[in-house]
Image (cartoon, rainbow, N blue to C red; front, side):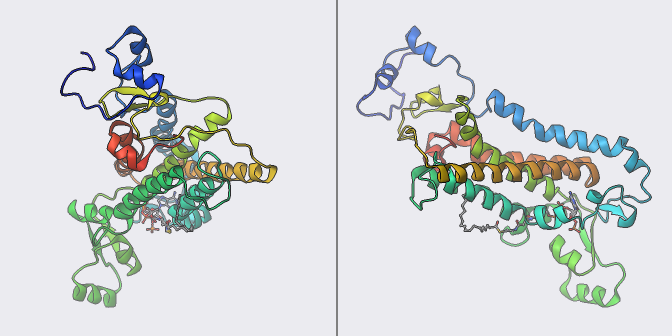
Length: 349
Ligand SMILES: CCCCCCCC/C=C\CCCCCCCC(=O)SCCNC(=O)CCNC(=O)[C@H](O)C(C)(C)COP(=O)(O)OP(=O)(O)OC[C@H]1O[C@@H](n2cnc3c(N)ncnc32)[C@H](O)[C@@H]1OP(=O)(O)O
């Protein structure tokens, strides 16, 4: 079919580059070479697939580890699904199998803060988004903050507050869960007055047991979403620093699927200019990347530990599924929908 089809929407006005002119022509062999594949823009590139595959592989390996490792089989306490941990904690197979381990308390339980801090460090220091360490507002910085905003909204709705209890708590109740105050008669009476506790946090804080429903793993969700967010943001910068550039596919206003190099529909306005950095700026740039890589690395380790010592297979699977849905919304939907891309942009473009 040629580009002159009457109902095809063409958003460009006057062709200003050779690429623009080529896009206006019928499908010639040259043009077909420029669009060698019409693969869905919603799908990750090969490198992204490989990197994203680390998550399910980590979950499976962690779960297998807990089944096979000598330390878990010989531990004096067993995994208790009601306490959601090895109980009593003193007999847990590893320091990382206890809820009070320092990385859980200060890193995962404050995970969104660390993710935000690492992203902020990258956004203010990396020259691909704006002048290093200067408070200049650039399109790329605004779009990076917009992507963070969407991810933060999803994190909040899933784990913190969704016009009342968070989605994980609502799901827990919908699947038959409830808060059971077992021992303390005063607390039991208090629970009677309040009818019931609606969130896992309120329930546990009152000494109750949050049991009976399906508890989507908040750890798996947060660790995957936070580290993938950082990974997807810094990947183009890391690749470019090594002289590489993995082409992603996007759908442009005319409906065509093209490689990112060919975007000419106005959703990306400027081309990267080579930046010359002072030594200090370069130091900060490297530091920004290092902080992000550090947070990604620790998140991966904690994901592995979570897979090995906490939750059921199904709880980990649903945590993974919800995180991947959010990653799709922030990083893959914009590739296929130009209107969303105009707002959220794409890292490195
Ligand atoms: C480009 C960006 C620009 C930004 C611009 C803005 C301007 C900035 C100015 C300045 C910047 C700096 C400021 C930024 C501010 C940012 C805003 C914030 O983000 S502040 C929010 C901080 N709060 C968090 O981060 C909470 C994160 N935590 C959570 O969401 C939850 O705690 C979550 C999801 C991690 C987990 O919830 P679960 O622990 O209740 O549930 P389950 O994962 O299902 O676990 C069940 C049980 O199993 C244990 N468990 C599971 N895995 C474990 C593991 N691996 N180790 C130990 N225990 C484990 C858990 O501890 C839990 O037990 P048990 O409830 O504690 O009794």
